[in-house]
Every structure is written in structure tokens, then in C-alpha cells.
Image 1: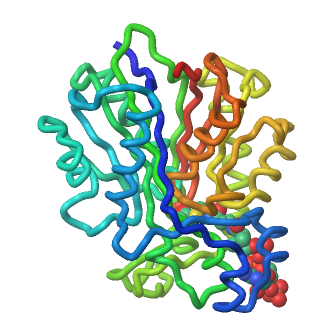
Image 2 (image 1 turned 180 degrees about the vertical axis):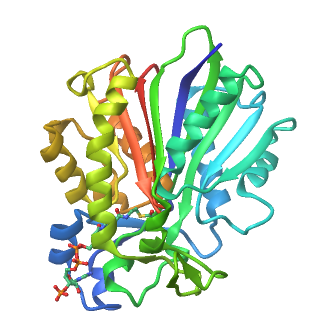
Image 3 (image 1 turned 90 degrees about the horizontal axis):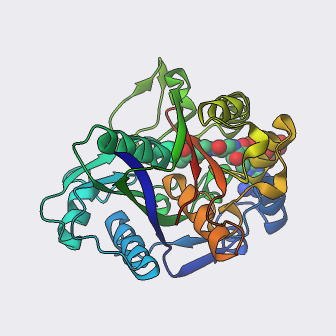
Length: 323
Ligand code: ACO
């Protein structure tokens, strides 16, 4: 059996925050944020709203919009770096609240590449024949881990969740995949309450997000431009064959740079950064769902999605949209 994506759902918290909100917190302004990042708004989770709640919102939306049942889901994967707590996992909380009585459940940590990794793992479980119906989430409450004294990072993050159902089918729709990591860059983007050093460099242990934006920006552009043609080839296609490219929405300028350097048309990219900010593992499903709701993505379209972020780590898949 092969893996087929059969449904998508998303959820963002109600509270919308515009750029002016930050003008009272740090020295910044709307013009800088829009021109340097492309972000205009983001959503903040309420005090009582955690990553598991956002997952449940995305699952509810998936069921409502796709008219599917989740009863026989046999594995739940939640990609997140902002879990409700370290233990129990978000995935077990979601499994319980959704009443998926016999499902396996794991959380995976791959930052903004987490959703792509989740899809690749789901595909592997189905191809191995051990599972038939896997629910994959990318979900974050990054604003609970944001350092509001750092103007270069606090303006970036938003909260949200995406959910995808992957089922066993005679003909799948995942065409190819790439994965990779550069652990030596771990010190450039981290969140820690334990370690004192990463790669010999002192780190701050306040459990907030710390980022060397320029270093991550450069690594992302260099790495992902090199990986795009490789993913196309593994998908049995050329780059030009793809109808849509969905890179992780970290910064609109990164998306523009990827297109300039590879010649891929910018108008064939989908993004969630402008209205949701950087939502890490949720950014790709949010961008895809936005593209579907706006009538851009159609059944049969070839889509390349690539996540990249803290680790440093990346993963991507080529797929043919079949929902
Ligand atoms: N408002 C006004 N000025 C600011 C702000 C702000 N919010 N933030 C920084 N500045 C200033 C800096 O102090 C600096 O001033 P200086 O020249 O006087 O020293 C100037 O703007 C330029 O600063 P840079 O840090 O070089 O700004 P840059 O253009 O690189 O933008 C940003 C910063 C947005 C963080 C960018 O580097 C970026 O998006 N990097 C990539 C992030 C990424 O991909 N992360 C991975 C995924 S996230 C995850 O895994 C959770």
C-alpha cells in the first residue's frame, strides 16, 4: 500500500495582533516589520490555550471541511517545539480528546521542518504495512516562548496548527522526499531550560527563543536553493513542473530569495507569514490551506513543500494534491 493525503484542516487562535502592538513593547515600527519580514498580523493563543487545544481545533476543522471520520486513525504524530508540557506528550492528549482508542502517539521535534518530517514518517508507517490511517499535526504556541525584550525576534512569531490525514491506498500521492540537518548551527536558533552550552558556545537557559537571524537566513537560502532541484528529481519531475512551492514561512524575503536564486516564479509560491507570522511547524499547512481557500490549489496540482529551522534541520516532500 502507498500513502495518500486525504484531508487537511487548520486552526488559529481568535486574537489577532498587528505590528503596532509591538511599538509599545520594543523600539520598532510597522514599516520595519513589513519591509524586513512581510508580516502584517499574527494570532496569539489565549492564556488558557495550549498546543493540544490548537491541534483539536485543526482536527475539528479537518473533519468538518472534509466530511471524514477519525475513529479508525491508528497513529497520531504531533510536530511541535512548544508542547503543553514535556510529558505527557501533546499527541497522547490529542489521542485521548479525539477518542482514538487504539492509536499510537508520538511528538516529534524538528522545529519548522516538523510537519514535513511528520508526513515522511507517516508515509513510512503506511509503506511498512504496520499502519493504515495516520493523523499528522504541525502545531505551535510560540508566543508563550517568545523573548519580548528582543526586538529582532519578538515581532516574528504567531500561534497556529495544521492537521493532515494520511491513509493507505493502492496509489499514493507523495512523489519524493528530502531530509537533512546541520547540527553545528544549533547555537544559531535555540530554546533551552537545561543546557549551558551548544557546540562550545554559552547559551541562555530561560526557555525562550533565541535566534541569530542573519545566520539562519543565510543558511536557509543556501541550503534550500540547493535542495529544491534534488527534491524535484526525487519526485520524478523538474522544478518547472511544480504548480506550487510552499517553503516554511519564516520571512517573505527568504521566499523571494529562494525564487530569485532558482528561477522559480514567486507568484507560484504560497505563504502564511503575512497574516499568521512565523508559526514554525504550522506554517506549511496554514499556507496550503490558504491557497486552497483562495481557489489557487486544485486537485492534481504538483506541490513542493520544504520546512527548515531550529536544529538546524530541513525536510521536504513533493506531492500531487488529491483532496
Ligand atoms: N524593528 C526595528 N529595527 C530592528 C528590529 C525591529 N523589530 N529588529 C532588528 N532591527 C534592527 C537591528 O538592530 C539592526 O540594526 P543595526 O543595523 O543598527 O544594527 C537592523 O535592524 C538589521 O538587523 P538584522 O538582524 O540584520 O535584520 P534582518 O534584516 O536580518 O532581519 C530577521 C531580522 C527578520 C530575524 C531575519 O534575519 C530573519 O527572518 N531570519 C531568518 C529567520 C528564520 O528563518 N528562522 C527559522 C525558522 S524559526 C524556528 O525554527 C522557530
